[in-house]
Amino acid sequence: MNIRRYEPWSLINQLSNEMNALMESRSSGLGDGSTAATSDWIPAVDIREETDRYLIHADLPGVKAEDIDINLENGVLTLRGSRSSEQTEEDNGYKRIERVRGSFYRRFSLPDTADAEKVTASSRDGVLEIVIPKQEKMQPRRITVTG
Figure (tube, rainbow, N blue to C red):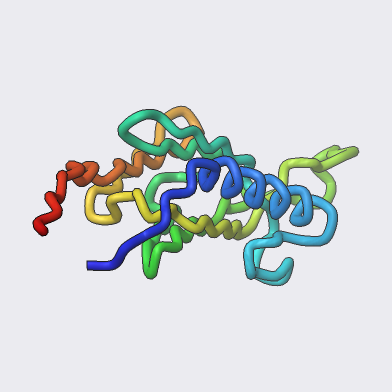
């Protein structure tokens, strides 16, 4: 049994670190250990913590559920997939094409409190929802000192 120091601000510090990484990724690439060569686009993601779980919502419009690959290994959740392009011809009258097609790739480090065995995912209306339950808390116990 390892003794861990209780740090009440650890979640705030973790959130701050994730926000800093997000800001860096917006200005200099992906910031998650991947490179721009691995992704054609980056889906927008919301991460929310609730009392008993973490929720990740990723905007994946036009991406079929079978084209999404989610892996969890060594505390890192990897989300990848692709949005296929429709067959278009040069002379279809397009003046501007802004909808990105191709592969996407995102990685997230899960906190120690996440229960990796019970992670679930579902896709509905272009939004992927990943539910990451928290582990049940260990009950504190009182240790008596004998003398």
